[in-house]
Structures are given as structure tokens and as C-alpha cells.
Length: 173
Image (tube, rainbow, N blue to C red; front, side, top):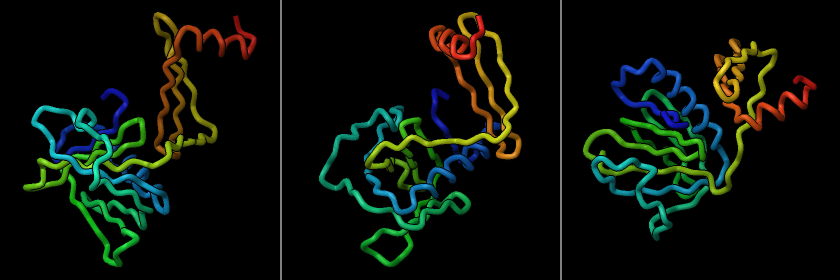
């Protein structure tokens, strides 16, 4: 998956429902934040992230109001209009850079919408009493933190230098 969270309508991926919940949470956390809204025509076979996202005159920056995901539809309020706006998606792709690519259903599938924060914000996740595993690997291990109460698993793939730094921090040789 390459660090992306992808939900796609009709997908048989076992992670599809989980990914939709992750995207829903991210979308709702945009409430009251300044976002950049961009639309581009997609080229067949080209990944959404690989399209030209250089600023264009129809790109819009605004404070997103009341973002919600209900079913397959993203809802929000634009500050200049009182009506609720919506887009029903056939595919949602959330990048690790906090950029959501939306492919609408129906005849608009040639369009890709990108929603991103104007300022990059790192998400903080707090795990209370997680279960911890160390999975051995050839170069350096993978740390796995699992929090069943939040249905969350965090995998930390360490570089050899990161593994050495962690061991020295805890006085382990």
C-alpha cells in the first residue's frame, strides 16, 4: 500500500472498512481548519498523487465547516454558502502527507479532488497500555504496538541506527 490508506467501493480488501474509518476520522478532524481544495482531470493509469498539483487559479483555500462522512458521501460546509455540500466517492486515498484524494462516483470519475491542510500538522496518537511486540528482522526489528480498545495497531520499522539508538537509550546491548 506504500504508506497510503485507501478505501475503494466494491473492494474485497480485508482492510477496506478499517481504512474507511481511518479516513472518516481524518476528515472529521479537519473541522475549523484551513484547507486547500483542488480539482484536476485524471489521466487513465496515472496515480492521483502523480497529477500536477501546482496551484491554479480555481484552487480554493477556505475553513472547512462540519466535515462528516456518512455512508460513502463526504459532507461539509463552505463558509460562503449556508447549504451543506457533498460528494459521493468511489475511491478515497489518504496519503501520509495528510492529503485526501477523492474520486467521485458516476460521470465525474475523470475528476480527482485533492483536499489538504494548508499547514502540515502531525497527528499524535496516544496508546494507553498497549500490547508491545518486537518482531525480529534481518537488519533491525519491527516494533508493534497494539491497542485493542482503539482497534489500532502501530508498526514501527526501525533502521539499524534507530535500533541502536533505542537500545542505547534503554541501556541494552
